[in-house]
Image (cartoon, rainbow, N blue to C red):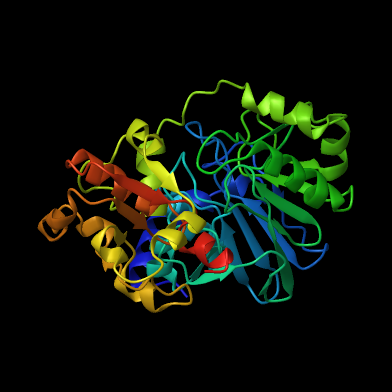
Length: 392
């Protein structure tokens, strides 16, 4: 159900969406090219792309709903379009069970938390996400059910480490790892071209050829493709070896997304998007790294805290969660570092390793500390997720 605040928003937005009749006209005021599956005589699913011509980022956001129970999920919501989503939910009479981000976005700010506040929905992301405010961290192969619709969550790293694709038996929402006639870049935010190739060729291309591909972006006015079409004609993949694909991806020379500084750190590092200055991308890229093995070796035995400081920048409640905390670590959440910097003054001349859930917030924190004059700051690569996966 929508909250009173959400109903107020819908009252302003819905008339613009539903002023025309018919499935295509319904969204004409907000989109001229959308994918829409809403045939009352065909199956039990409603699948609608809700952003249409998002000219800035060409991002696509999908509503997937059970036609009969009216339970729904939204995939990859964009904060600036939240009013539109509330209107579409109301038009179809749907209750939003969950909002899912396929990965940590670098080109727009998500609205998982805002949708939760307005609708009571749960937020869902990969177990590898750095986002600390997720209700359900999911694993490869997990199945999310909405009414009578099952959505299989597939871990498809490559564009980012935490990337998911969503398969409902008819469609696959590929996020940014597989696009129509292309693939998502792999040159930042934990991307890896070899991982991308294997995610696509070994997982997505293993789906039936008739599976409808719904990408997270499109820059050419396309609305859908199929797995068979992408196998046969995608210029980055068709007939290409992994080595050839890696060479292509490593030489794209693309500019960074326009809102990368704001988006990554708000989406992943839990910074408020209207407070303070964020570290520059060049500062984040300059942060030195330590592996889980190196940190484990450095913290063995008695007296290690005399020669090394470990700063955990997660929220206090996270330390009580399944990833636990490192004994001897100092806990100051990333958003409180500047206001509590005096507590870290004793470590200005001591090596500092910063940790968080997945290594993103800690990278921001390490850049902040370096900018504040701390001379020997490093980040734990992959955060506590990687540390526990390494068996420590």
